[in-house]
Image (cartoon, rainbow, N blue to C red; front, side):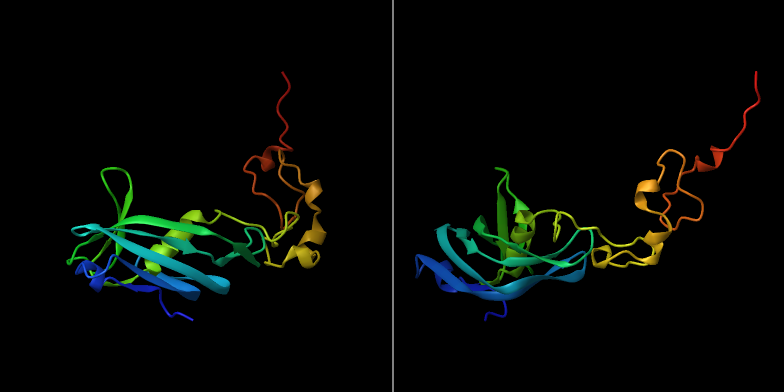
Length: 201
């Protein structure tokens, strides 16, 4: 198991090698976003293979593959959902000694460039961002998922809760609000006008 996906580029940068390679398995990835540390979870150790070739000067090209089974949350009930992925890696790289942390920037050509300052390159942030860009925006553990009760958070896939029993969803009247006392009521600012009696002409 690999604690972090690292590739050593010192010899490549000294032009003593034509390429540099790294491979391993990851059971999670940690990355920084908005000043906070986030974690991508995997259902099983995820294999990665990376190869970096020099393009001359401070530029290089990274290619490889990453095959995680990403654990995401069901958009309705928040259960874990396993999402198998096959991520093809490919990006330009540029060495800038002043770069404290590796980061992606957009080049004039529109391509993304991985900028790094440490020849002992940690690829965690790059793999995490590439995985997120390739992951679906949302997933369901089942197409028929009933979601959670909006009042108590009960998983409705396991059966109805007391709030559901008070007012069946099919009785909701979207135009006039919902029956009085419903805890599942949709707030309708015009519901109070339903019984308003207007003067006859």
